[in-house]
Image (cartoon, rainbow, N blue to C red; front, side, top):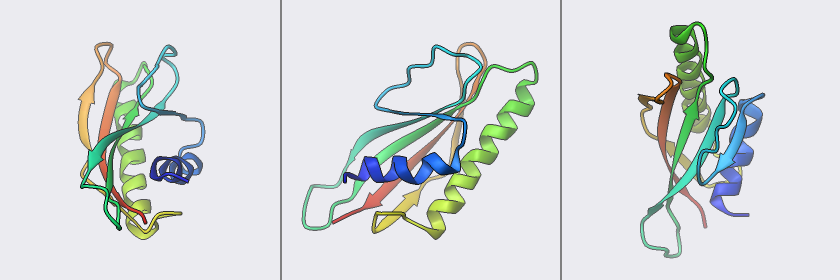
Length: 119
């Protein structure tokens, strides 16, 4: 199993109802929430591998944008805490601090850098 598969299996049960995607965000449904995992490289592939990823949590369009932003931020914080205490099938997961952005239509996005250690 690859590191990306392990991360997807780790986050899926923590984000019930979210659409988990890999590589690029295909968000045709503005009422859905998306978690998009993208590889961003890492250190050279040696005996101990340290692949890096970016996880973007994209909120839904809402009549209460501040409330939706808060819910997506809470999901990001919950994932970070979960990664700090457990790495699932991986040796180690190290999340970065979430960075806030917004889509053109005002949906909140929190992006988290993730470094993994696998063998």
